[in-house]
Structure formats: structure tokens, C-alpha cells
Image (spheres, rainbow, N blue to C red):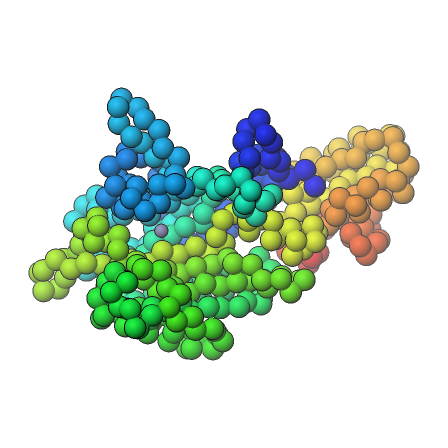
Length: 389
Ligand SMILES: [Zn+2]
């Protein structure tokens, strides 16, 4: 499908997005950003590298160093970011916050780099450079229940739009017999675990409880999507963090005039975009829905004589931001149709003598065949209104 490639010269686990892959990626990103803005998130952008000092405070240099790309400049260590969290925390910290500012929700398509042993790398599924659809929520204890419910609603909304309707949900809680293993107070964990479980129950989502599976800094929900071939893929995560707010000493002023530590929640809906992209292609077996298809329409002139008309149709579609291509090869029309079918392009437009005479186009749908002859205006209206699916 000519969507992406990976090559040795660039480095294993580093993805080159080709034009068609980039279009799909951009459509998903535009949609994602729009929806985040509608749902009370603020978009942020953060750098790819930062001083070692940042990662010393965050604890990554001590506990995560083997997975990080480190380098030195002016005798100072720098790190290529393996995570976006410390940057979002720094934006939070850029000015004093009060309870009236909360909740704050920062979202970013943040590209991170993690060293993975070369034996574990696998196509788009496991890579060294990837983009997370990341967000961090800072809120008060009173706001937690509502925030978790909102995140779950939002996750469902986004995943369903992208075509995923079946999930397996896991709630990882701490091991009550070993409280010393975890950061955060008894009260913190109670509040967080209750918020996660109750939100799932209120939404009627069946889930598996995984006692002792929580990481040391907080409980989490993992959502695995189930694709058309019944395989499950880890995708969304909602994760409390009782560690980083302390390390970076972030606070807000409460109604009592005192400083309090906000609750921090990490959240990714699609996970790593590279991986999600692979799941998406598998799920649809390469046949992406019209709104995601890199090429939505292939225009097929019956012979070279009709190529100028085909180009005119193409320009009209382009002006309406419909993604089309003209097949100007000198093959027979049946060959061109077969090619477009193999490329899984949702629509074909046939241009010949009859179409020019009627000032119309004949429309074919991938996998279906001929669906009628319409004016270009009608075609544009139908494809835009999603009457053509
Ligand atoms: Zn994070």
C-alpha cells in the first residue's frame, strides 16, 4: 500500500512515513485534536530532547537509563525523550495554580525514543521511535471520579469512530499485602482504585481485576481492542501517578489557602500511533473506510482520449478536498478497474464518451461494482455526506 518503510541505513525500529501513510496519520491526528479541543483538553508541544537534570528529577536516569538515548553537549548530559510527562509537568509548573484552574488537561502527539533490543523489534508493532497520543490530567481529589468517567466516555468515542467496538478491559490494583512496594498514601490508592472501578461499573463495562499488577506509582486501566480476527491488542491506558507530582513538587492552592498536591493521570487512547496504525490496517484488512483512505477516488479514463476530462474531474474533486488520482496509463479499462480494486480504493469514476456527453461520471464502489451515473456535483455531495460509505 506504500504507506511506510523501515530501512537499515536509517536504523531499525525507525519508521519512514510515506505520503499515503502520512495522509492517514494526519487525518487521524486532525480528528483527534479536534475532539480533544471539544472535550476540554489543551494542546501542547514539547521538545525532543532535554537536559539530563530533568530526567534525574523524574527518576528516569536511575530506573530507566538502559532504555534511553543519552548524549553529551558542553559537558552536560542530554536525553532524547522517552516520555512526555516531565514536559507537561513543567508547563503545569510554569505558573502558580489554584483549585480554580483545575482540572488541567494537556494533550500532545509526542514523539518519543526508547532503546529496544533489536531482537524484539517487529515492523510497526515494536519500534524505537514512536508517537504517543499522550495526555496528562491534573485535578483535585474531588474531581477524580468525574475525570475518569470522562476519559472512559472519550476513549470509547474515539475508538468507535476508528472502527473498534469490542474491548477487553483490565484494572490493575496494588497487592494489599505489600503496601511498602508502592508510592502514595493508603488514601491515594483507595481513592484512585475506587474511581477506576466505579467508572467502569457506572458505564456497565465488564472488566478483569488484576490484583498486584499495578506499577509502583499508581493503579491503572488497560483497554485492549479486539480486531475483526478476534485478536486483542493493548491500546488505551489510564494511569494514576503518585510519584511524579512529588518528585517535581507540583502543587495548587486550595480553597483553604494552603498548598496541595494535585492528582496526576497519564492517559493514551491509541497508544503508539505506529502500532495503532498496524492494528488499523489489520482490522480493516487494508480496506480503510472512506474518511481514512489515502486515495478515496481513482478516476479511470476509458482511453487516452478521455484523460483531459478525467483531469478536469480530478481538479474539481481536489478543490473539495476529496483525495483522488487519475489513472492515465494506457491499459484497458478492465485492467485499470482491477488495479484500483487491488489497491482497495473505495471509489472509481469512469470517464468515457457517454459520460462527457451527459456531463456526468459513472461511479463504481470497491468490492461492489457499478453504482450509477451522477453529475460531479452529486458525486461530491454524496461522498461528503457519507451517503457513499
Ligand atoms: Zn505520562
